[in-house]
Length: 154
Image (cartoon, rainbow, N blue to C red; front, side, top):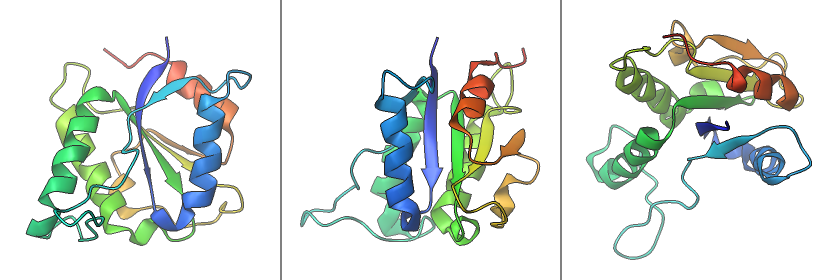
């Protein structure tokens, strides 16, 4: 059964992330999961994307939408590019997802998987992954699919 995932990434990597999401939607590729990430940016009253850091009160609508997506996802895939480690949103998503999922009977271990993007083998990891991620793998969608197929520890 396909895993329900939330994909966390730095928006500087949008092009590679779009390619990754295309693999998910390709029926001829073995990567099989349901993506519960935001499809579109959250917009304010004037129709413009809300571009505030996660700790800013004005980002509350964005946080609220992401939390709804977390409720639908059983796992998180963090796509790591060269500047992902410095993304406030990626760090917030990792910490918040972990905190929400650790309340479940099977806990939060093994729910967060980091996969480096192509050409980012030596990119620094987000500091929030320490102690919250079960594994980090190089770019390998097939290996990621195998990890997502493994049942969570109960």
